[in-house]
Image (tube, rainbow, N blue to C red; front, top):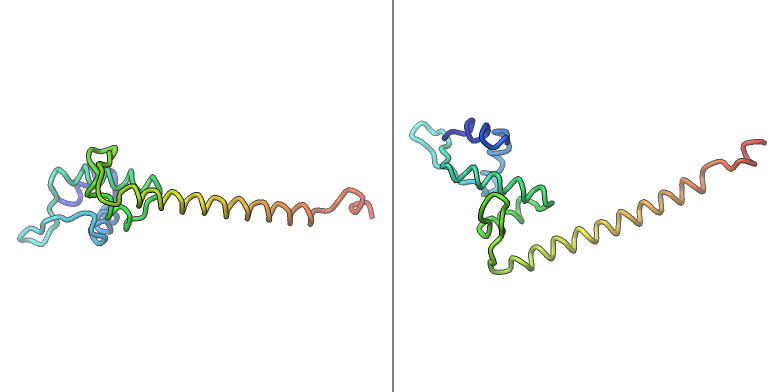
Length: 123
């Protein structure tokens, strides 16, 4: 199938599909006319990519994990270092959440300290 059909079947625009190819996540053949030609398996791969992106993984991480993915959910079969990579990503997310919570608390403190108090509004 050509890129337009893959786009229609997956709901992912052609620009994104070309990006996945550039990242090494999709590997279409090239026809004699130079057009990208995808197998039916590409639909499953694109679905896997989208779901892994929804999990917050980067395309680099997905490139590492994609060989371990089966089905459209995707299910991840045990591959070398798979759990280590997933745990590292989860730790990075937890660290980021901690930083965001601290930033939110600090901003709330500044807002509270800066808001006019009722007695100051009367002056």
